[in-house]
Length: 305
Image (cartoon, rainbow, N blue to C red):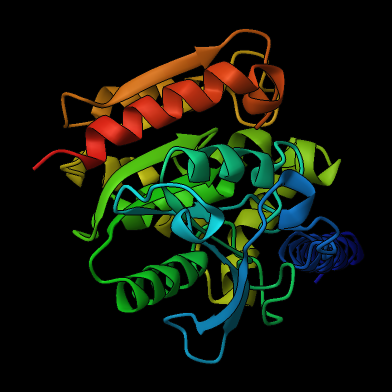
């Protein structure tokens, strides 16, 4: 073997080792976002009664924490429905960009109970990997199980934001217990989204690092982004879905919701594009209109026989 060939092989091996090391480091960082504190309380938003709850994910080693907010116990006439909130990547039940407690207060006033919880590796829930909608499906299923067990008489709906919106579609789209879904800023397909947008998350050039990360991260995690396909769940969903997306969303482009909406099967599904709103910023920009549209959609969707 010539010296030049030996050097070439050695450099190639170093390149591969360095690429794999970068993939491991980036994957670790993406799956271990900094945990944000629960630094707001329901009382800060006029919610006088909040029950602290804990329940199991369908993945039994994971304990999840949250609040159950009862419309009746907060002095409002209950309408027989519970809404489960599903928060975004690196956030917690507060979804501070809204903030979620502000929206919850409006929904309570309209008669909805609200269940807010932290996904794994967020808020006060168990440590684990954050998988951007893959294993989080087991957490949302655990929340649905809990809501269905403590109030079996209630109709159930899901309101999700970003990663939580995608998870709401993945789970709610195929779970017959869920009657309606509000998906604020979801992605169409995780694999497709990462292929296009990973450099924004990592700060690294698309080539060659996308290939390293998307090739080796499933091997390192035992979790493959190719399995996170909200579009497939939307195709199968026989229930109304309200898609909300800001036209100035630079994190998950508006086209994701537009494409998902074209796949929705139920005639009462709808798409609301909010002018000038950024990623999960529609409520903050137009809170009154946002609440009015969501409540109107849910009352119609969840009142159907």
